Image 1 (cartoon, rainbow, N blue to C red):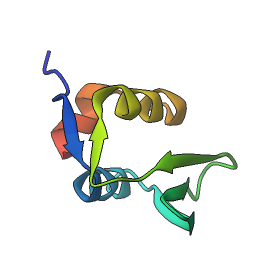
Image 2 (spheres, rainbow, N blue to C red; image 1 turned 120 degrees about the horizontal axis):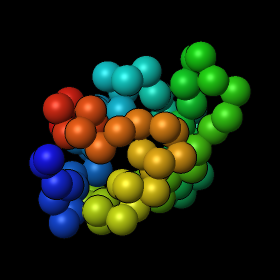
Image 3 (cartoon, helix red, strand yellow; image 1 turned 135 degrees about the vertical axis):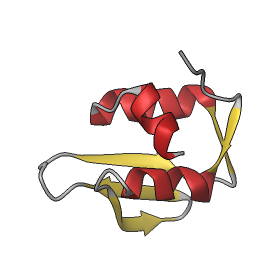
Length: 74
């Protein structure tokens, strides 16, 4: 099983999520609201140049995406 690195590049993280259908709906300061066309819920991510492993895990858990699936696209 591959493991998430300690930190991830923020822009690369958003590009990987875009491959799964997630897009940035809006932004307020450093927070970006992610939306998916097939789902009604939204998720807010504190966007920085570097995102920590725990923040990535929290986002993946909320949107229902497996870590291994994400790492294949990252």
